[in-house]
Picture (tube, rainbow, N blue to C red):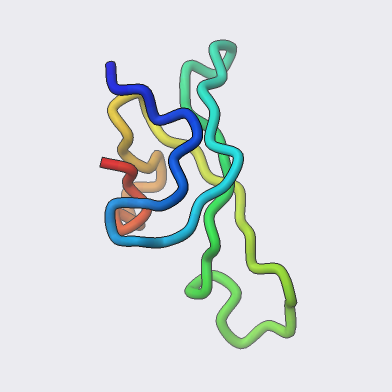
Length: 69
């Protein structure tokens, strides 16, 4: 298993923060700066929570650009 703790960006260069492995969920949990999700909304901070499987793939498979590897 690759260790993704502390990764600062996705494989496509999208910023991430607070990426840590959560043993209870058996997934990596963290936040991504997601312009796409907040498009058209008047929000200053565009951080969105995200989860990844152990191999770095975003759990939401409609958003492969958020994969860590």
